[in-house]
Image (cartoon, rainbow, N blue to C red; front, side, top):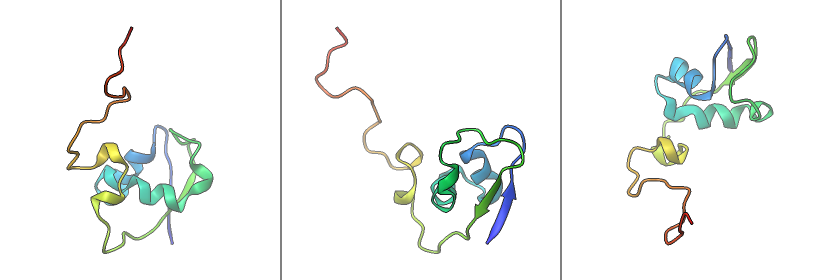
Length: 84
C-alpha cells in the first residue's frame, strides 16, 4: 500500500484531493487509517496509508455532506422544533 506524509495544514479532505483529485474520497482514507480518526488537521510528518480506489466506488460511500445528489439539505434542527 502506498503512503503519504503530511505537511503543515493537511486535513482529511485536502489529502484526499491531493492524492485522488477529489475530496469525496476522504472516507476511503479514513477507513484505511482508523488510528488517525481523532485528527481534524494532521501533525506534520504523519504517515497516512493510501489505498487504491475501488473500481465500484460510488458517491453513496462518501460522507453525506460531500454527496452530489442530496435531495434535502442537511440541517441539525429537526423539523417542527422551535428556536424558543
